[in-house]
Amino acid sequence: NSRLETGNIWKLMLSLSIPSIIAQLVGILYNMVDRMFIGRIENGTTAMAALSVSLPLITCITAFTRLVGIGGAPLCAIKMGKKDQRGAEEILGVSFASLITVGVILTVVILVFQRPILTLFGADPTTLDMACDYVSIYALGTVFVMISLGMNSYITTQGFARTGMCTVLIGAILNIIFDAFFINYLHMGVKGAAIATVLSQLASCLFVLRFLFGPIPPVRITFGGYSLRTMLRILLTGLTPFVIIAVDNMMIIALNAVLQRYGGPEQGDLLVAAATVAQSFMLVVTMPLDGIAAGTASILGYNLGAGQPKRILEAQKYTLLLSLAYTTTLCLAGLLLAAPFTHIFTPDPRVSALAVTAIHIFSIGVVPLAVQYVIVDGLNGMGMMQFSLPLSFFRKAVYFAALFALPAAFGAVSTFCAETISDLIPPLVTVLFYRRKLGWIREQALSHRAAQSAKTASMTC
Image (cartoon, rainbow, N blue to C red):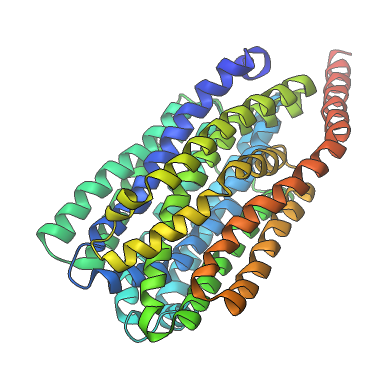
């Protein structure tokens, strides 16, 4: 806590962000390993399309994890900044109980309604059975996924970024080993990929619980004393990341539907498979940006609670510089190395060629995406969802407008330009908005300091 309040911002940010970035890079591997193995089996293109239509359902689990789990992490950081140990533990306990409850409900819903849900998400007769094979097994690990991801955010929030990195690293390494065994050795296809994911997430879940029930973290999981008011605050804070992922789900569903419609029976599945590969490239862009934001969120939330506006602005400045350096590197990589990247996922030259085109288009808007992530995630990290949510909505609205307008005028492949347009225009609006709110953010931090000083004075008296 003393490091968060008085430590050198640049060194502190690196010490927290680098493990988070590594964890996100490992998480990318986690997400892509299934596609790497599946893309090279017999009927690999069909299997890739099946995974693509399953992705929105899997992402839905992540959305609820952010709503009831990760949503409480900024509140926990603010409580820590206010030296409110009991309040921080209450938030952690409520999040843990909520993750288990929601995880069980989602498991039942997915197992019962998977076929109509997958059909709604774009599965056709060719891919439906294969998608059901994957989802029916993956659903059994829903609680493990939600606990490992949701509770891991509380580990990072408390400053244990390397421990959070180990959580992801354990799951990723085991997922590679299990994928090789179940898919390559036992030839179980998409079922093997799902089993590998569930087992690796179980291992990550056990690691997280062992740490948060142990003696090391200052804020640990406790039972009892659950408050409806605390639950509502967590839901409100988690609403922005929940909505972002939920809308991302709609974007994937809409993208698959548009590609199938304008691609027709000849190119529909090829375009969906290519989009899956191109989205893997965007994971390489966005997940480390999330890692940088996760590493600095604890700094922002803690210093907001401690009433230190200068440290907040300094942390955001360094976060932006690091994010811009990363996105510039990825922009160049996308433009120069797209072809070898696609060959990791598919030997089909038709899918590879379409995916290269998509990655080149996506790369154009990658650099300004850093600004969007730093500002929106920073606002959310300080619990200011009343600002972060509209800014996120605006970006999604721009995407949907372009998604439906472009292919009608220019054909199926132009659909990929929707991503680039939504990465170029919204950051400009976000910057203008943030400049107008800088003074308000300073006032909020100072008000927290005044409240803490008054509380300390009353306790002294």
